[in-house]
Image (tube, rainbow, N blue to C red; front, side):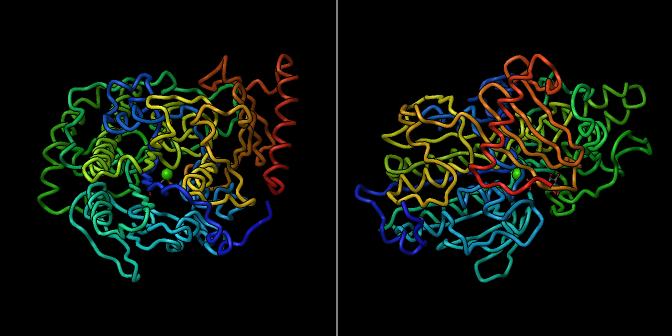
Length: 510
Ligand code: SGN
Ligand code: CA
């Protein structure tokens, strides 16, 4: 197929059957392990009955990955169907997404869709290709958030960001142009840092003990020395007031080990009534902790922080899940479910204490993976769990296929429709990964390849290679790059890495 300019492409819409609506439900930093449909050790505590409901009525992918495990770049990839080096959005910082290039929203809009994005956007430049948008500036806030309006002004709304985003999405659905199919991106801030729950959910995990991952006290041995230099440990870098919610004025002068630098940004945003609810929950817990702390071991303090982190994280997930439930109910109640593709995904994974960490960025499984569940009436088999490796470059072409729009050559992903239909003999056997940011959390740049059984990546800063055997070492605790037993695997993966870099036209690694 020849490369078609956008306008020509819009005109050659192949749509014959009724174009399905596309409801894209998205969140920020939602790790797979905290969705109970994925199973695993957190399944019993993960508050996700509605995401599970969606998964049960469609397909859920265990092997779903991003191309660059950071917010803006992941979103830019979704909007363009291309890896970061091709769409130009390599890091969160920067000029923003160049929307003069081909984008999903422009293509669907051109193909007759009524389009909207509501909530977290994080692509710096204002949305293009949307009939309606109302977005959080930058990272946005949890309490009483401000939303940027289409006329460039900002407005503050009282309440909890996840709920407000949902209400705005439903309001738009009510008012949309019903003659057209819709493409709605409903995108939450949660469960992103600083993991601030809806006040009604503060006590959701009271009395519950969250299982600890086996690597909560990782020693970072047998891997690149850069791991120990990251600044995302629950132990050393989870800020006491900002992240762990123990304010300075609540400490009785006791000094706590670890990072203690940031202000209580979300607390300061609350009304007096909201603060009262917050304090009624955290106050007594914090007092009890401060009393105990002089007699606690360092490890027990880390464990306490882990519990505090996870309960707040999961409580923010609970509101996201309720949002998914409300959106699914809306489709049911309005007779839209049968002709609407629904996706729930998040921009990358996240560390929930694995390797002692929070945050993401690394190509290790927990942050490389994105949750992805899709219900495409007539296409997905209810309750299916495809094993194929999909990536966020695939979303745009999948939606284009659904909309009957020809997929331009420049797009690097592939429609996952064949996988959903169980016809995936030709499906990819390897994935390309790149991470370019340098700064917060001190994770170095790295570039790699993952197959169904192994992972290889290169760290230009130190000139190191890391190789992991995902079958024998699923927690990725030992690089076998220099092990003679893996010489053949290493050679094959290096070749595959080079092949992928050529295939995706990746620039030299610096
Ligand atoms: C913010 C967070 C970081 C986080 C980045 C990227 N700090 O800067 O912890 O890694 O976002 O996250 S915060 O104090 O502002 O919460 S991303 O999801 O937007 O890429
Ligand atoms: Ca994110």
